[in-house]
Structures are given as structure tokens and as C-alpha cells.
Length: 112
Length: 113
Image (cartoon, rainbow over all chains, first blue to last red; front, side, top):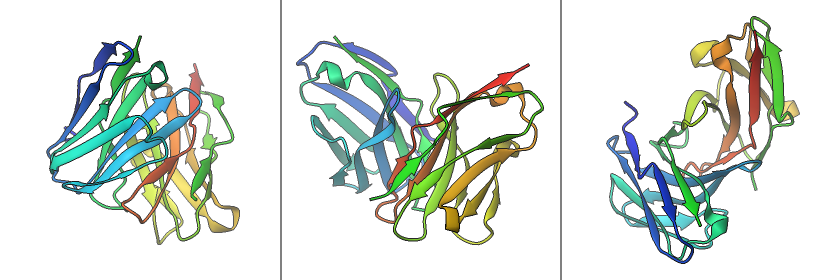
């Protein structure tokens, strides 16, 4: 197994509600990332982490926040969900710049 | 800023035929380059990577890619495609800053019987 799990796999939520997606790894990797995947846009980086409590913004970070209180967990929060945040969200982990990523199976989020 | 272009949105090949998927990158230094494959409803899986050394790299599932600095390209190839190769393929360039990768928009491969 890849050692990375995302939860939930699917979620439907209403506009304006907060939503938290969880990424959990068992590989003890330093780097963790959240991407969103939308048709025609490939994968776009939302936030990333380079250690416990060390996080930074990616290219599409507006409306999202993250936390990493333990090496193994990286949480993505949509403070107030909007329809434009309907997407598939992928978490990825990496042991270093030359490792490449291991991806989770994704979370399909629908905001109605 | 780094960027990746995959010029072909969709490619169709016959089973048993050869395959080449194109990838062009923009990066200021020596790039870390990756190819990933995504089957429907799944996450992405790393096929191969390049960061130094031999410019022809071998990956899993019989894929290979060639780094050409002069053309800023990292094209993915396979000599004989199988029906199970039908998927979406993503090229990515990785930065030395926290290993952040920028992905292309992907190429969808259809395999005809």
C-alpha cells in the first residue's frame, strides 16, 4: 500500500458551510501537498507543508487553510464553501524534491 | 515561474502501436521532471522521473522518457501500447523549494483494439 489515505472519499456540502478534508500518511515523509483537479486545469497546488506546523500557500490558496500538527496528518479546511470549490482534491506526499509524489485516492467534493 | 505544457489534449493509438506523449517545460535551473498516470477515478501514479544523469530514463509499465535540454522537452514513449495503458498522463516539473511540482493539463490516451 502507498501509505497515504484521504478522508472522506466523497462529500456533498452546502454553500457557506465549513469543510475539512484529511490526509494521513504512514511514510514519515516531510513534505505534504494539497492539489485540486478540475477539467482542463490539470492539478493546481492549494497549500503545502514542509514540516510540522510549517505550511505555505500555493497558486490557488484563496478560501482555503491548512494545518499540520503531526507529521502524519495534513488537514485542508474550506472556511466557507462555495460552488467554485466543487472539485476533486488530492493529497500527495514526498520524501524530497527528487522523490516524486505519492498521491492519495482523492476526495470528490460537491458544494451545492 | 515554472510551467509545463502538454500540447496534445487527447491522443488515440491502436493497440500494439508505438506512443509518444509530448511535454515542454519552463524552469530556470536544472529541472526535476516527472510523468504520472491516472486511471479513471484513481489518484496519480508516478511512472518515471529525471533529475540528472542519463537523459533517457526508464520507468514502470514499459515506459521511458527522454530529457532534451535544448528543446526543453521531456517526452514519454512506449514501443507497444496495451489496452490497459488507456488513461490520462501528466507531466510535471518539480522545484527545489519544498519539492513543489507544477503539472501540465494532461493528455488523455485512448487505445483502439
